[in-house]
Length: 611
Image 1 (cartoon, rainbow, N blue to C red):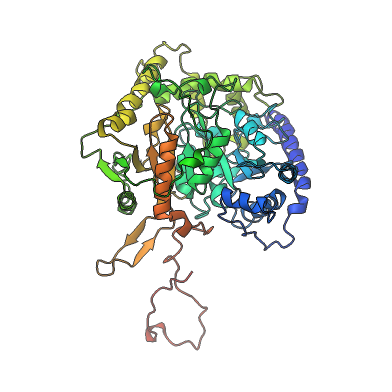
Image 2 (image 1 turned 30 degrees about the vertical axis):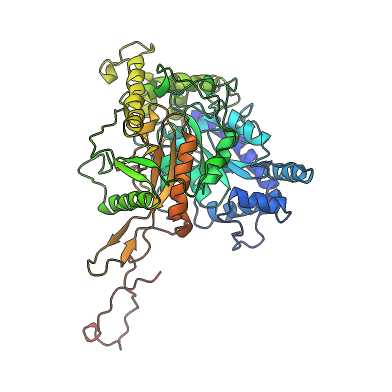
């Protein structure tokens, strides 16, 4: 058993180590000469601002790429230890130099020379690993680019590296810890290092929030772009299923998977969406030529007028005259024994008021008696799809332990290497998927006899009788609710602490979401001093939901909210050790001396609350 553990993992480890050494050599010139120096010149800079500097010869892509590498080395791998970046691209600086050469020859483009980080489940046909955080996929790199990576290269973007994630995109165990992977360890939250970044696109959101990159790519099946965006205080765009290709992406479900974007502004995320999307069939992913589940069988077809540039919809007055349906369903918490704190609910109500202040008409959908249909077929769909889809992906890989294998191959690998892969939680999701009957019309005993096709029908209706019905019945531009509860403290023993999450409204039918930072929960203890409040130091976001291919409308509304509130601009991450970080200090002790006066003769002092 010990020999079985050592041999394949040793091979993988040696390969990964060699790749690391290659990367280290390539970026050696970028290591800060002063270990205390952390670049801040382009913190919070937008893509438009960076392009303006590069076009006016005030900045080169190589200089910008070095800045981000220096920040990663100082704050991600050292310093507070965000641990968001799993690997740096050994070719990043050469890509930046090439972008600079293209610019000098007159080339221009929205992402030319802009550094982008990719989640470690997105194939790049270069010297980097694509492993979904697992040693089972570590070894030789992917043989070709994913469609989205190819689109970035064609646009002249600099692929800076890969980000850590919840291993297998958080689809290995029901007891998993968001942001943890066997290869990458635990990613932390830049707002407070002891807080969780949520998942599964944990590193992508944390890196963007920490200014380790201009923008990043993540993936979502149900919440994996928007929840990390919520926890890390950034914008997250989860596109309509099929708007971005999943070709070359480690899958969970072809029914629900999509590639999305994390950015510090709506405009930045919209810029990237315009580059990575597939307006027509990409030749590799059938979804790029079709419509998502919620539209299937309704007579609706894929639009022929999908925009090429989504920044045209960014509008600081985007909420003026808009009709927004607000729902609070589920925000009180999944478990009545662990309700959502009132300070979180109050923060969402402040956001609803901000919508109205910015010119939107708010319709209370719950008060109107509207009920969203449930996508209760989701779990069966994901398990059924995963077993089949992951085997198809394994067939595209060579030189990794699961190459050409099946889900059982991955299970066997994990069982053979528990120290590397299962130190904190098991693989019960993998095991459950293997128990399903193989046919789409076979009754599944684990789901009360429901079949896969019946589950698809249920989730289709969740779109028809959910978001689509609400928009139609109340003449809405979008539906809005809180995204998820704010970040919890990472707990490797008890696991994640989800109180609520709303991405399921769009996950089953395959509809888009735009998540925007919105508020900071706070506690105001005194009725006589209502402005003397304690902020908890972790953000809360709101999500704009729409029907398929409604990204232009959602971007307009979200950018209007962003402009009206400017939340992130006033609440930047501080890399604090914990949150909140005030009012937690104790008294100042000093060693006793024989000549000290008795404590009883001293005046008691209030606890110090300095930083």
